[in-house]
Image (cartoon, rainbow, N blue to C red; front, side, top):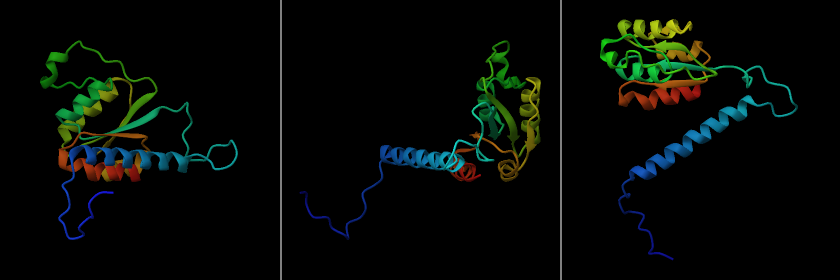
Length: 162
């Protein structure tokens, strides 16, 4: 046994690895809970909310500035932005079985560029200036959060709860 623990001692600082381990465990638990809720408890039929394995993964992008446009490019949607002129001619194929179905940004210029990039690949994404409205209306399976760092936590929690 170790030394007795002093209940009045100051708490030990939380280490980065501990924080990441706890965050990963929490995310896995929330994801498992969402999957468990969608799977029928009895029988082989699907619940109305459960996606079919044949359905495309519906992705929404919150934040379509420089970082969001990077993510769109990685998903196979080339954004026409002078900042990315070095990528001209570089093609990333869209992920099979996945589609960006909604884009959201507070700035109309960013939103226009992202919408045009998805539409150029045949997509018809919803345009949102409110992430709350996008999460409520778009029926998303995954969300790319490309906003300033201090907004990631609240947006991730809202996306998990949506």
